[in-house]
Length: 51
Image (cartoon, rainbow, N blue to C red; front, top):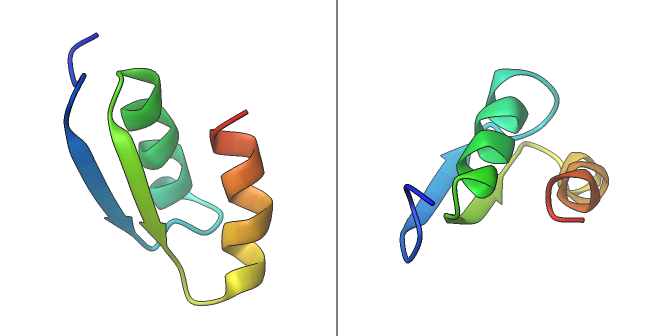
């Protein structure tokens, strides 16, 4: 994978573009750290990104 061994930090990872970007980075092998305005959006989206 293109990003194996890399770490990506995505701010604004709630619903929308940030969430999509975090998913794409994860699919390419990066370990992804996400941040959003509310913990609830991270809890919901985190389960969708990393399952």
